Image 1: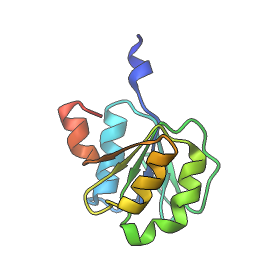
Image 2: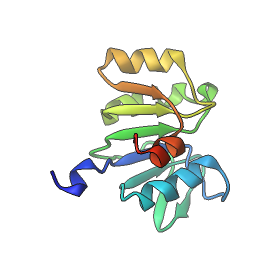
Image 3: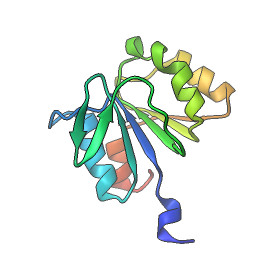
Length: 125
């Protein structure tokens, strides 16, 4: 197995260009670990040359979606995220959502309540 086969194309939902925010930190850490990132946020911007998109961009090959938006802001994203057919969705602290979790599991998507940053640092990403 090549090193690249383990890398996961990740969509960061709630991406922001604001330094110090967890979603911003996650983007940098994912890149440091060699993962490909896509960024979805409420405002357009840029992280290390990767555009932060808004709306529902047409994305392909997403392995992991890591959620940095609170459950109150997730319902409008349910159908979009399901259409991306990710293998797994990570609900970071503050983004836990039992309703969406249940919908994703029903579609065969693995769901994890964890911190992306911690997963990267301990090698469980």
